[in-house]
Length: 261
Ligand code: ZN
Ligand code: FE
Image (cartoon, rainbow, N blue to C red; front, top):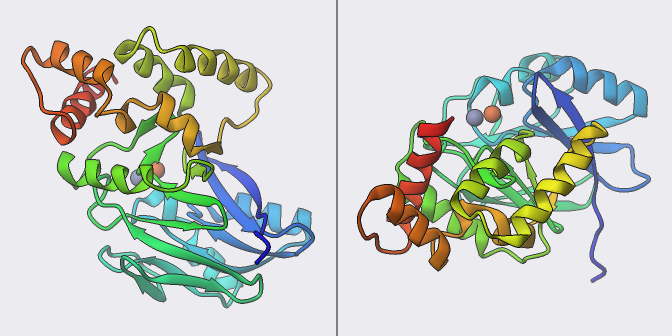
């Protein structure tokens, strides 16, 4: 089977949200991922002559769901999202291992439950892309509003096990700020230093710094590097005592970042 190359449009919303419109080159059909606001989505659909076929929701926060009712009033399309969260307008509740089939596009995404940011958060993975909402961010991860560090660490570990070429489509433009923290944890990491320059150039041109290949995250994102000696040592330095690699390091690094934000 020939691999399908997605064409994913980016719709900025609010201050720093991204609403993603995955589709195929040359097709007018798109899905809408996490429409926190309907207005910019409607403008983009009209401008590009697009027809939505489904809404995909990662979690219940308003900046990801606020546009559902307006869009559902205009388009008779399914609204997929986590079964374990209360999301008005959801028509297709999903749990881990489910798949979302977009027939008009011939695309299928599988559902990963990734609790941590919220208790029912889901990600969508398929065709070389990961739509991860507020679980994994570029060079960072979501805050733990509802889940435990152990849950988030397990969720991020599942994401880390995806193919390295997977393009990470998170829901916010946080890369520059996240990299500042990544450098606090690993000041000598050459990949982080190079990424800081690259991100600064892109932001100066008002370009999104999302998506990025997962490999880039594995090399620079402290929250995916809780088994790496330099990150463990830095976490131990912050905690003031020895830590076992894994969830305890993750919990410490997450708490460390929270104290600086
Ligand atoms: Zn959120
Ligand atoms: Fe958000």
